[in-house]
Length: 124
Ligand SMILES: [Mg+2]
Image (cartoon, rainbow, N blue to C red; front, top):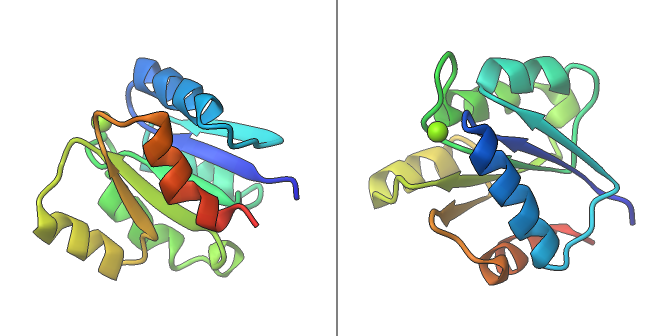
């Protein structure tokens, strides 16, 4: 089934690396979008949800942790899967963002195998 993906990260280079790693993982998306911070992501999601969002934590204007809370207030995005992708790896932070509605967590540096493992359950 056709799936859509949004990559949210304040580094354009990191967005490219994530996109390339997703491709290397063998996962296929028919539509991909990018956003540079939480505000930009919310703006784009106003035009319609995506199936999976890969979300950085540390970003200017609106962080990933704030973005998760905002997305979970939107009925239109209730089924959206949010996987955090961050260098932050404290269990407290991970537990907090999962409690706020994130569906998974990938720490940087990552591998195609890690993306495959974390995203495949949400590809059916
Ligand atoms: Mg960042």
